[in-house]
Length: 294
Image (cartoon, rainbow, N blue to C red; front, side, top):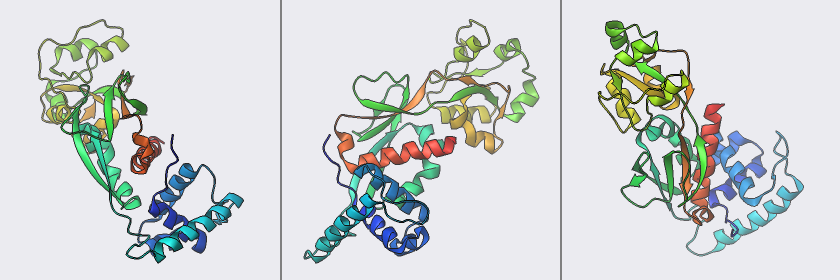
């Protein structure tokens, strides 16, 4: 793989932090958040493949001191170049295709952190269809939901999940209880090809087929909305369904969780990660989801 050129914002952040030795002061100088400063430095260290700072006092390592001299020399040359400014390198375009509910529940609540950390990247989000991997336009990066057997692209697992039945408080009050598998099977079960009920039944020792009747949705968010409106019981992945649980629209029917056979994967075509904006988003997304899980 060809060497990646670090983003100018990462280099400017490194120089500022090395000079003031304070994340807060560097953030104020650069007009970004302290978390953006920390993320840019981590990204730069990943790109150059070495640790630049020591411990909490932000003293430079030997390699960091040598690299700082080169960075300052490069910034100085850019500042002397007519008509150019080190802080204005032009926007980089990045197109990411995401499944609807992953975007709604996982990506959007933390997207501001990426925008603040990488103001030089213009991000476009496109909707893709889960399992079918269909997008309206070509994308640089794709978040796919499925088994992970993708021969056409390189990929890495972003997030696994567990499922459990959810329903609205009103539906449970009017139609419950649902304490046994028999009572659950007799209820209105909302269906989805994304999360078949067979997963839940098999985990409980019941070799049952999918319900023959009932509403069906190919989007987890729509399925959660339908369950919240009292249309029946939905088998929902907990990480994606958390917003509906948090606001009380849906409640659990069982304390048990069952692993989903599917997961979310970040996918890209060979060579895409040579572009620093793609690598930056991939690193940030994996780190953000990992921090969330922790």
